[in-house]
Image (cartoon, rainbow, N blue to C red):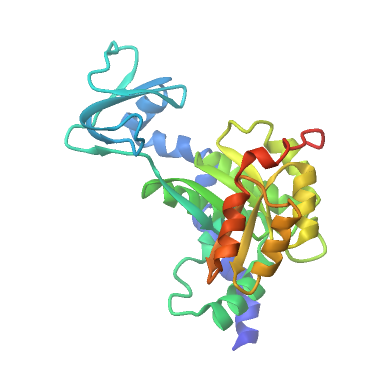
Length: 308
């Protein structure tokens, strides 16, 4: 059974990629707006006024409103209050009456490339099913085009259901071309994301050193939709390298079985503000304090930019 599965895994990936191949010949945003005149009108304006909605800002300083407007300029929220006055020809006005306006949801842990594999392991367990079938069998078979399609499907699906910010724990960096494909899909989707560059499989992988090229090529500013991180196990060498390069870390599989190393990293000053710790199951109070203390900016110097 496994031999048959192994022979057809490329066919499985290819069929999934084929579903989006035609749509990805042009920008997904352009493809969507081409069939929706109202969306095209809004996207063509530098100023957008969302008017008359129930506005839940989730910001105590701004507050919530039973009826208010949200003014967006050049992709950024400029003002939130009732009765914002803008000339009708100076902005695209969206009527939000009887609707709730609130920030997009945030997903802090997602393997975007696996979007091609949705629904194929609905009754599976982490071990042995997921580790055997997804990690050990299908993931190594990914080509750059498969990675691109999986990331794009995931990102557009998130935006469609209201998640606008996410961390892509990307474990498919088999070659630099795979990483480039993942980043291109994130860029074209329009989602805000942290691209957590992780190891891949095979001789073409260049983890972790390729983070330097990726940062130089794609992440010239911290004030952009995509920002980088180095995906890492709790490995002192990898954390030291991330500190040298000046990027955050995203650590997968943090638990009571690995917290001894977490505490050692804290004592060594290698945990920094902005680092992310995934799962964190059965941690002791000391481990939680180490994570909390690592977010004190006053105890750390600025990140290095000379390698960017």
